[in-house]
Length: 72
Image (tube, rainbow, N blue to C red; front, side, top):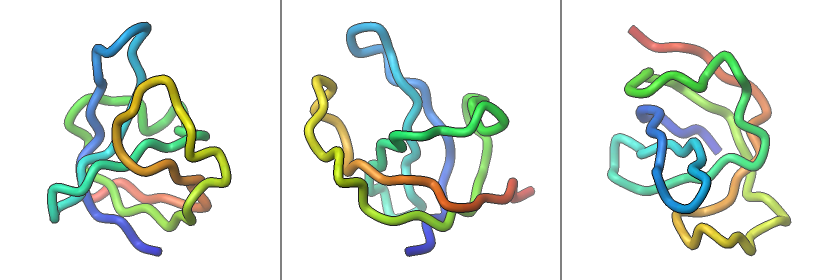
């Protein structure tokens, strides 16, 4: 699947990085690349739903990032 959106840091518990899609859907990457860990960064991500859907954060849908690009 292709996801267009922006990177956000969620201050729940110890905190985690997520992506809010242009359609306002929330995504929780299980393997968020360090290069994308910038608040407000606009990205285009190729991903698939993660087998690790359970999370203590209870925020968004778990995904595995396969590839990405920064969008200006």
